[in-house]
Image (cartoon, rainbow, N blue to C red; front, side, top):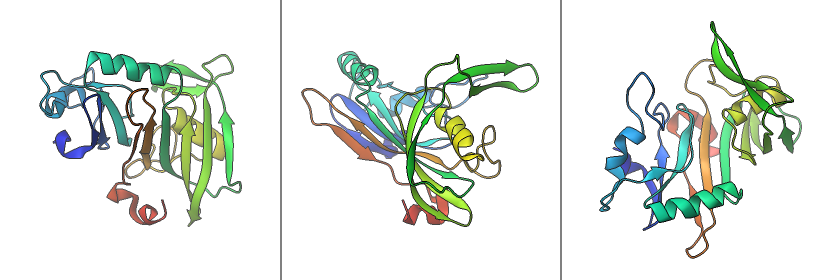
Length: 215
């Protein structure tokens, strides 16, 4: 039940810890989704909340929802003016020498009948910028904190592969297949004009193993 995964709630907004494997939007082929379960998150309100952004199906962590049309408008403004800060933790397959950096790599969508679609580096694509810092390293892998400046589809997954050469552990499309994808929306900061800033964190899922003690 999603109501058991609420990290923050007030009259305007709520934040849940979205489980990996659950898409935000209902898939075209049908099936379970956050949108399909919004009634679980009414919490005494007549109308269900509205997701304000997206997380990939296999990405876990902080997902913000607006609880009214007025709140949706205010929160949307915060996203559009890039005042919302999103933090992600990911395990990258490879040792990284630098301690921090910025990835600037425009992305475009590429489709093929055989492989379907994916995002690829494209100088003519949409601008995509990600700040990152190394958290810890062991066994030839690195725990990295990503802070995206832009919010392109699959941005962190492509940027990780292009910047570090290997990509995220468990990412079947852009990284290293095998096991769950080790990408987690760990923290969300949302400034608000008339209410206290939302600043909430979601703990690393158990399948991150020992990395959880190093985050």
